Image 1: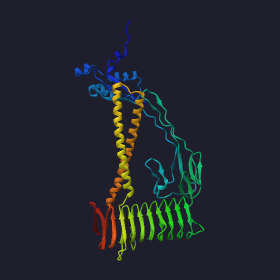
Image 2 (image 1 turned 90 degrees about the horizontal axis):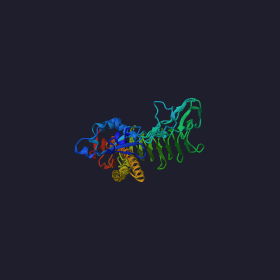
Image 3 (image 1 turned 90 degrees about the vertical axis):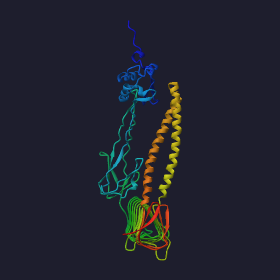
Image 4 (image 1 turned 135 degrees about the vertical axis):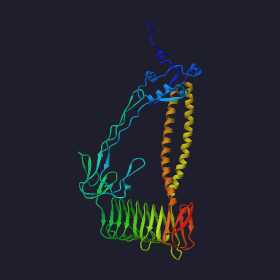
Length: 479
């Protein structure tokens, strides 16, 4: 009667291969410890081959995700893997399904589309224009959720995927739902406005000056005033604001652009603030802020004007006198200051938000680096314990999992911060290209600031452009 084969008969190298199964059963590693005979003979005692090692893993219950290439490399040259831990099987993580969502269809190719944020969500209020739509026009269509894809451990156990959520289709004001096609349609001619739902509103118009019969305006759309806005009134709009007359000491706030046909007489009160551009004929004693450009056709006098991009005053007068003008990239006009040396400050390239954020990121980099160093040291200690005991105790395995998760979270955060830092550095580098242009006259008494550098103009100059070169403010004659 023959003696039954033992594990050692089937796998004579068994004592030389140590199997490490991760706590989540998503990976398997081997560590090869050559026998004393192999080390003395400077050759391996056994002949390894891929098929035998695969059967060896299967005998340990490892049936999925086996890395054939790694095993073949080991079998071909075991000595190069001696005393090293190497992964030989890897599970497949479950992939959650996508939630249903609304695909917007009412933005034509020549209109701005919603801005996608870093986290993947959509900022509909950052659009340049809100779409005009006609009655019966399709606005959006629901894209159904997906089931996701199941995962599997290296032991062949299924990891069920979480299905995406089926979010209900909701309609706002003047919007109807077609349940069969799961689409939204406009119920009237108007403009799209998106809050937590899609709405269609008509344009809010005032046929004349804004007065107490209308009062203050807070509108989720575009606002048109076919007249002027006196002091004390307030207009807040999610879209653009167009005023055919002028604005006195009023407050005009728009997420889009503001166009004031006449001009702004601020009377040292009120505010005109736009998420995009501001265009007007003149600004006197006003406070004006735009994320984009401030475009003035005649003059800016004794005002505080701030623009994320450029301030341009290039009409017949093109005059800036008094006050404080700030722009991210450029101030371009005909004349700055006057013969009476009225105090005028023009500042370009100052980006305090970017500088402050850069300092915050640098501080967070230091904190993450310290955390990663501590995590690496703790992992090393646990690996030493595992090599001595052969396997970590359950509590230590849980500790190792927590350390691994902490490491991954910090590494992901590091990558995100590096991307943000690169954008900030590019933004700050662009301030080196900032400029102040006076195509006619730059009067003495003007203070100019480029980035963090400042210069008082002592002598009146003509046709001059100031830029930064090698951290110095340099004046160049215009050709």
